[in-house]
Length: 353
Image 1 (cartoon, helix red, strand yellow):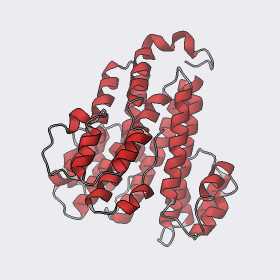
Image 2: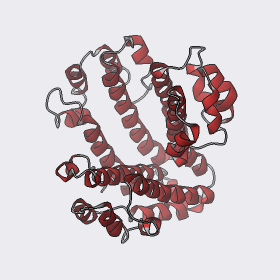
Image 3: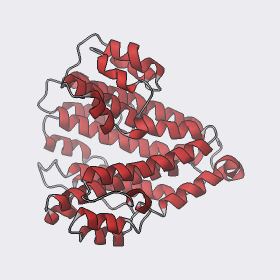
Image 4: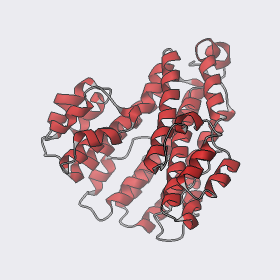
């Protein structure tokens, strides 16, 4: 797969079947007609009835009334997990490793969820139920015993795929909310850089498309880290250390972001980059809460475009991300219906087509 343009010669030998499968899965994503109908639902049971005619039907069919939003989200996630596991069992190298990389982000989120929950004395079993099923690993329940980063690594994470990413954040400092957030971002930085290098090694269309998608992810995280750290004790150097060392913003944009001390300064730094200028132009000044949605919309556009090209692995990454966005949409719609806030229903939906 290393020679660009020659993937067509041998790609289908190992990955042709799975590419067909994932494109088939993609055709089951909800359409604009589905969203229109869902937005008119009056109760969660109406939502269940409408989803009964989609790919989610079998997963919700046996759920008794009254339904809860958490149940709808859980079943939608379960569908994605089943599809992922089917693809993983059929995959050969290097696609199987590529598919495993997709789950490492969920692993990091699960580690952070359990460590934060334990810090606030929540029950471990309750926390495990909230973990994303794609990010579970054998020793995850024992995370609760760790008092600091070093113990966290030595007792639990040394045997997981996240072990190499921990080298940058092993300290003896006790875990508190600030340290945990820094740990999350340090791990994510190491993970994205590792995934980026892996995709570069694959070469061909996979490398071109995936590196573009990962660069966008790295840039989005850099912006979010900057906005979330405004007004905290995080220094410029600390902030800069959390940015991934690739992407359109690397290195000059990172220097500017590290120096920002309010949202409008972030906007000023980002408007020098045409793709991000388009995102920020949708927001009025000082309006940071709509930024996430604007980034999600841009991401969906890029993910959808990856299906226009054949013979590459990025379609697997794109499909997983689009399904996750769809689950977020369904969660938002369900919450709006459950809380009788239907006037806000369109505020949180990001169309996935």
